[in-house]
Amino acid sequence: MARKPFPLSKVYGLLDPVPVVMLTTSCVGHSNIMTRSWHTMMEFEPPLVGCIISDRNHSFGMLMATNECVINIPTAEIAEKVVGCEKTSGANIDKVKCLASYPNLLRNSAHRSSRSALQTSNAGWVDTSMVDRYCLFILEVIKAWIDSAMKNPLTIHHLGSGNFMVAGKKIKLKSKMKSR
Image (cartoon, rainbow, N blue to C red):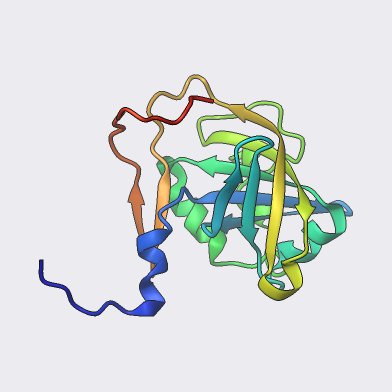
C-alpha cells in the first residue's frame, strides 16, 4: 500500500461521517435551528450526546439559557435545505420561516415525526464543564421518536468542504456485544 501525507485540517472528514443533525433551540418566543455534524454518542443509557456548539453561534446562548433543545436526523430528500440552513445565522434570518414546510424540524416538544425527519429527540444539557474551553455540551436525550413508516432512510453525512455522502446499504455482522 502506497501512503502519502494527508492534510491535518481534513482529518475530521475521515473520522466524522456521523449523520448530519438539525438542532433546534427556543428562547423567549424565538426559535432557531442549526445544522450540526460535530457530535458523538457518549453513552447508551442514559443516552448522552456530546455536541460542539461554538459560542459564536446564535443557538449557543439559547441553549445555555434554556438547557434544552431538539435534535432531528434529516433525510437526504431535504439535504439542500439542511445545508442552506447551515450557511446562515439565526441572528440574521428567520430560519424557522425558511424551514416552515418541515414543521417537525422546528418542534421543541415534538410528538410525531414526518418523512423529512427520521428521528426526533428532546435533549437537555447535563454537563457544561467543557463549554468554556471547548464549547462541548453533554446532552441527555430525554424523549425520542422515530418514523416507523420510513424503511431504509437515507441520511446525509458531512465529509468536509461541502462534500457529503448518503448512507448506503446496511450490513449485519456477528458481534460479541450484547444487544440493547
